[in-house]
Image (cartoon, rainbow, N blue to C red; front, side, top):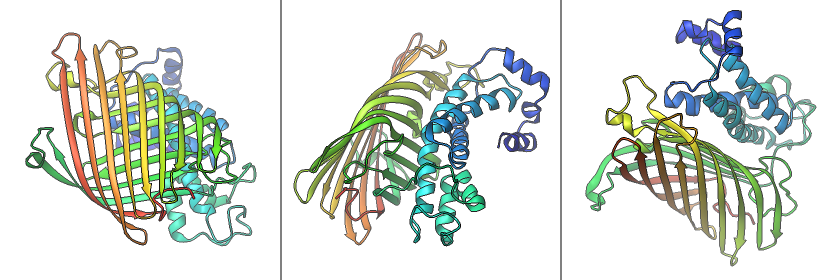
Length: 426
């Protein structure tokens, strides 16, 4: 894979950057690791996706999660040293080597889920399993190219210890339009644009299923993504790395150490984060028709956010237009499910991007992103949804005036429900 990326870079990008030689490899092995100035999208979503491919290659060849994490981290380091002539980058090593696994494992599980939920069941091998449908095959390749392609070529790896299908997974697809407000009190009169949006989300292995234990990393995860006419706007994953189940019956949950990866690019609130957090995810059946689900996480990691000083002329032309820093962060999610008729979701995220590890940028940011959505089922798996997002940012500088910003967005969506119960585990 690295050889293919290198060859593509020579043909399509900057040949000098990819003219790797024994001399450039020796120089990178002996030289210091730096923080590069690649564009935000390249460093914050391109490199995690590259790491996700490393992870998927290892997983689809029969390796377990932790072995694949080692391969991902080593693959990223190999690319930094021998994939390019530029100095190795420590921020890329975090993005590819760590965030890559936090993104790659959910993509691998989704790809396997599509393949294993065939008529022959999840435990069949290629020899006794009928051909997977073309749409499932295509979806598997799109979710995790190495997983889908390797299954097509050689089938299920013999060394894989257990199937990766779960008894419960819930997917939601939304297609609609949004309008962004400028943050003024006159809400309706401040609409500035309309954008088509496509959003997908999935809960995998949500606690509450009788007999299902969360024994392996990412036996539970949630992944969210959205695209608009402006491009990719969000990719978020959070999954249980190590922990335990608790409760049962009307109240069930999991707690432990989570791994999270977030990428947001709406306007000035563009940010990305790779983090570890302690937390819990639970489901409580209040009545037969009312179910409450939720998550709470508190942790820290490494984050990047847009450099507002550069927008005011504070940074030289051509400099990196975003800043880094160690980032304590928190997440709270609550979902109220009213039978099979409606569901209300609310999520709040907050990130404090400190000056520590920021490489003398002198900028500190407190960023809040809150989302709320209401979905009402019309018939079957078809629903109508309304969404609202509020984002706020407070930036402190050493030499420039502090800045405060806010932005809100409303949306209306057709929603396809993968589960008629809006994700409730029954």
